[in-house]
Image (cartoon, rainbow, N blue to C red; front, top):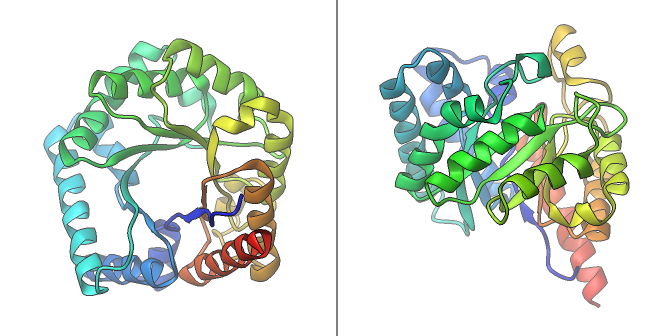
Length: 289
């Protein structure tokens, strides 16, 4: 790998919580967050649409479409304000049906998952952005999201939460999950991701995945060494402890496994993304020398 990996936007939720904003303040705060990630060198932009799944569960499709449209408009305005820095792609963040850490709340069949994720896939197609299904817990829901994307002619990213051993929360290996999805919906999923877990879980998953690791395009762990639900129960994510080492570890993982996009999930800040930008750039330059 001589090319520097692309850098993913960090989270919105933990940043908004850190800023302590609410109500009418949220829009301008979100604008600031977008500009901060752009300034930090992130070039794969995600929309603050993860929470829209609540409207989908309530079957309030108009509200969901409104959220996506508003967030895309906000991002485009922020890019203009920032002086149009290089942006490779814009993606809409779509969460799972159930709790991010409870696979028992995921749809029982891929058909149920398809029904739930069909509107997000449609909106991604209409808005001409990448559908980014993340923090999934099961391969069944991933198949449904992939089939929904296939119906609308879009190629999604699908990212899973991992446990401490680098497996899905169901206990299924990442390699088996990737093979199951690719077998059910060949040629549809653009790439898979690993997120909302510690760095060591990402590393374990990549090693265990073998040849299937080639299908993993993005890694973005949490700022916590334990399970994400434990962090939330103890008051939330409090930031990356060793910013430089974490960024260097992610850069090395990307180099070793050919990862195309690197970033951070809950608890990461624009400063952490800036360090990832620096570390991945320096490693790419060193390798090219």
